[in-house]
Every structure is written in structure tokens, then in C-alpha cells.
Amino acid sequence: MTRHNIYALKYAGPFTSSGAFLMWLKNWDKTVKRNYYFWVITGDHAPVVVDAGVSPELAAERALGGYVSPADMLKRMGLEAEEIRHVILTHLHWDHASGIALFPNAAVYIQEREYRFWLEDPIAKRPPFRHVSDEVSLTYLKRLKEAGNLRLLNGDAEILPGITCLLAPGHSVGLQAVAVETAEGTAILGSDCAHVFKNYTEDWPSSLITDLVAWMKSYDKLKNYASLPNLLFPGHDVALNEKYPFVAEDITKLA
Ligand SMILES: [Zn+2]
Image (tube, protein in one colour):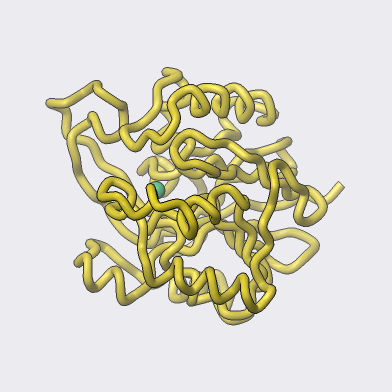
């Protein structure tokens, strides 16, 4: 069996907000922190990047605090973004997808229903959805599809031995998590199926909800897949950067 290592790369943050951002309708008067991450999976095959972070242009436009280009973060691991051959986009919110042009030579894996929502559904142009997306990278993905470098997935799909995309909607229409075979068992990069570990442990979503019923079912699915509860990782918890073995500045080894 192919065994992999998983790394979390913090490319922006920390950001503070009301606790209600991370725990829907709770903790209004608490102040909480979150970071922005993308992830790298290494193994017998070429490294796989999970999510693309934010583009330098959009980071400047949004004055994103603590920002380091995902390409520069990869250099800290001895990797070049141009050499990456596989990028899984968990969903098309701006903080996960807008850096995709940094990976010009990668096959890009997205759930078809996620792609079609953001590119083809007029609802995606309405204010709450526009607020969390980025037109520039959506246009880039459309061109990638025309060039044949977009891999649209319909549900669960093993893209390389021991690396499986799992459809886990709720936060977005077609969010996918990534199941990874590691020495410790099956680990799940859940991305924003949970912003923080507490979303999983308290069975309570964060504030950006597209479909709450689907979201709760996605919790069941991912918890079943993970070999151990502590191998189910959220998308924005500061603990990812603070409580795991140090690899390089703002890079930690999760499994
Ligand atoms: Zn996010």
C-alpha cells in the first residue's frame, strides 16, 4: 500500500472574527482566530497539492494579512509550483482556488457539480456567492477546461493510488475532501467541511452554509472514512500550524 505524508502550509493569517464565524450562530461575543492553508501530499508519485491558496494579485487587492504566495511556500519544501502535476481543488471559494494560475502544468481535479455551479448557475452571480468567489480564477478554470486540463469528477474518485477525492457538500455545492492513506491509517483533508476541529467534535457547522442537511451527512461520511477521529483535519484551524511537527516556517506535518 502506498503510504503518504501530509503537510499543511499556512499562506495567510491569522485573522480574527466573532466566534459565530467558526461556530454557526454561537459564540457571538468571543473573538477567535483562523489561518488560511493549502496542503501537500507526498508519496511514491509526484507531489499532490490540495487547494491553490490565493493569487498574489487578489491578496494585494484584499490586503491579505500575513500573506506569502503559495509558490513561495512550496519553495520552503524544495518544490516549484510550475513542476506540480496534480492539484485538487476542494471547492471554488476565493481562499482555496484563486491561486490556481500559479500551477500552469498541473491537472486540476474538481467535482463537476462544483464547477458547473460557479461557472454556469446564475445563482452563483448573486451577492452572497460573489462575495466568496473570484471571477479571474473562474475564467482561468474555464480556459483550462477548454484546453482539456480540467478533470471533472462525479462523486468519489481515486485519482492516484491511496489518494481519493470524496464528495462532501454542504459548505459549497460540490465540496470534496481528500482521503489519504498514511502510516497512521486513512487521514482526511476535509478542507472547509469544517473550519476548525470543534466543528467535527461538536457536530456543528461554521457560518458559510449552502446546504445544512447535506453538510450533516458529509460529517457522517468523513467521520466514517477516517481511521481515527484525530486524522480528520479541518480547513482553517490555527492548531494545524501550532500543534504539529515543524517542517519549515509555517509548514507542519499532519500525518
Ligand atoms: Zn476556506
